[in-house]
Length: 252
Image 1 (cartoon, rainbow, N blue to C red):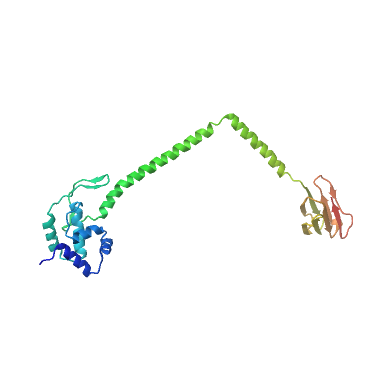
Image 2 (cartoon, rainbow, N blue to C red):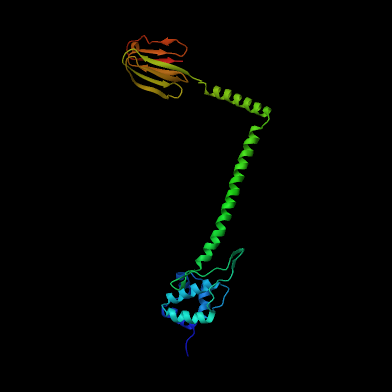
């Protein structure tokens, strides 16, 4: 007894050691369509152009006699060259002529995805456009509201800022005295705070070199040559040690 088309398809696939899932993945054709072919169920909801293309791809993949299989298939389903209406949700593809290349329909299941993409893309563009317009309108409204604030409110804000600036200026004002060490000739100087012994300066000042010191407490100033050092205070007064050699002074 001659084997049916479906039996030959199934046996050819099994000889290759492939499962339906593997063939579906390689050909990008749904598994249920391939199973229908193997069960000799060739009448489906698919348009004939799709069904013919899937069948031809499956036969070629299994390396069967294409001419013989195609003739038997055509005898079963007929030679209708038009496609039925295909409805995907609310997207409908009208009847059209099959596109045939070298005697084989060149349409695969991926075409349905492309048709869906053609519909989805304009929808996404429209949604993005509305979102962009909404953002622009919101920004304009925000600018209008900010410009229309009552003048009294603006005055209060200005006053508060001015008060804050005054407080900040007060905090910035130094609470210490700045003195300046002036070297009349090369001299070694050591300066520290009396309360915590914090060192403020230690080193050699060359002739005419000036060294400012921030005085926050009583200072102890040691020097190698007293007659070579001059200490200027911020009030304009100055101190000059009279002792020519090494010594120190206490500056309050």
